Image 1: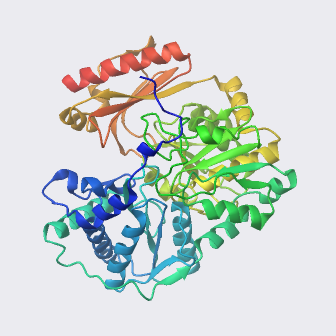
Image 2: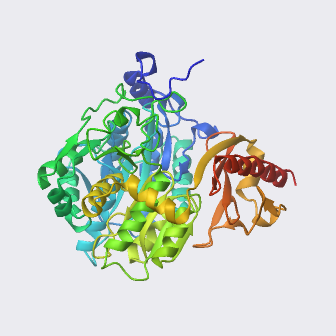
Image 3: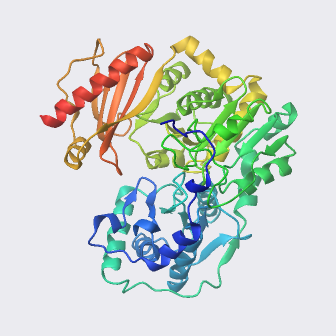
Length: 540
């Protein structure tokens, strides 16, 4: 049967949005059923109302738990809250506001009742706390399941540092929320959402871009830009960026529809707003020859996709390497000792770039939260993930966002073109001429829940192999070199290749990330041996 991946969604692919909203209010979770409990992953609690995994009780309990948590932390300033374009984000936003107002929390929502990207909330928190030293600190909530399918909802908490909450915070919030659900929401205070303050997220964010991006260079070079929000929260932002700065910028698809009927299907034939997927970006790729760069963002705009006429859709790893090479060569006011942050499943070409720049590489586990402390104090000037999420410092070396910023990284591509006269695709090819041309892929391998649990706690010492695909193994890691934090799996490294294995949080598989500097055939050998090595360790 022919796959429909990369083809436009059909009527049968679309959700019944009214049924999804109805289920949000009508279905009541049972906290004794694991699938119906609040569970915070790396980016908050996610699920579908249709599965009784994201319903009114979940959000009321989560919000009450956040109110109580912020009190334990002495966070008594205002709370900034924004939502993306998913159909469940509106109802969840209303529920959250009722609980926040019921608990007398000072709340800022969008002044124009517009959608709010994740980076705009992070930016607002950081800006407020910077401008109000000595006063009670602000924090925030983003109502979004990010790039997840239209039937899903999501809810995440950003403390006063502006980035994703750490595991201690999310565990506390989830445990308390499940306790409240189990007790029939006794202890949840609600009130009509009145007296809420308005904040112009879009204007404040866009006006500040001159302090982090060379807008003048983009304008002077007349870079021809196409921006596709993929039906997400960045629609108004791209429009204002073009208008405010007089750029040659076209929003190629300004449509917002919670069913996402204009999307092309992802690899599994689902509607998903992942701008790093060639299938999702198939409609964007149709415009590649009309502009010098076309960009895509997911629903909450924390991820980026970069399309150029000469390179098509850039692999996220490739663009991270180019962005790092460019930024650390064009930001003279950044600290001379500011490190380059990457997740340990990102490409090793970044290691070579870091070495050539004379910069320290700071390698951390998967999850953007690990970059937060470094971005806050300026000791890490750039933090990037292999899944097309990154942020970096302002020109003066101070924090911009401590959450992923897909708008920023997309706009950076235009600065790179304007200043260098070359596309990011050309610049990546130049990097491969210097450092080699790595081949990278992520695949899944079947695993039981017991095997996944064991893999999550596996020590590098449990790996008995001494070779990988013909090369001696030089490192077996279960802790990240940058900060010593547990990887939640293992990474095995040779001079020419590496693989990392981590359990999936949602499916009965584990993920194998692998890369080889010796070509596709060698990568396949690495992947096959990785599965054998991990399976042996799990049986041992």
